[in-house]
Amino acid sequence: MKPSTAFFLIGSLLCEGQTFTPVPSQRSMLQASESEARAQGHWNATDTHTRIGGPAVSEIFCAKAQNTCTEHKANFDEHLDGTFSLSADTYVYGIDRWTPKELLASQIRGICHIKRTLKIDFTQSRVFFMDSLAEPTTLKECESWRLVHVFELSPGNVYSIGKGRDKK
Image (cartoon, rainbow, N blue to C red; front, side, top):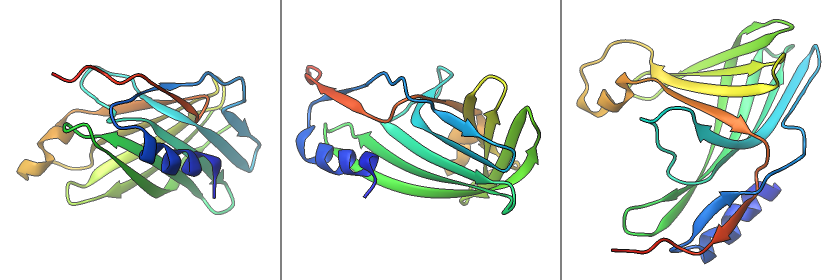
């Protein structure tokens, strides 16, 4: 079991009414060569219209020879009633471009045809993903995807649990 997964499984039993704060890490978030790239950390929204429901951590591995990137992601979501749920996802991206400066990979998923684009900027050691509609749709459940959602990966995949928020 990966350490990040173990943290979330244990944390889910202990954290009702708690807050989570990422623990700063000096560990390198991105490691890359001409044939492979690896990144790990926690996600932060980069805009005001995107909300993260709780801690979200990922481990990403890209292999140039296979022309894919695989992301293992764990999300710890807080619900309005103060309860939490844990979800784990694996995303496989097809690599669209790999240059000495950057890697772009993407996938299209779900009934809304959401295009998730993964960008690894080798020159600035930064990792992003962006979700947007891949095509126009009239489905009501897809309305929230009309805006582009952008996230940046930050170093560290460990959180401290703090005193809960006041419930009113």
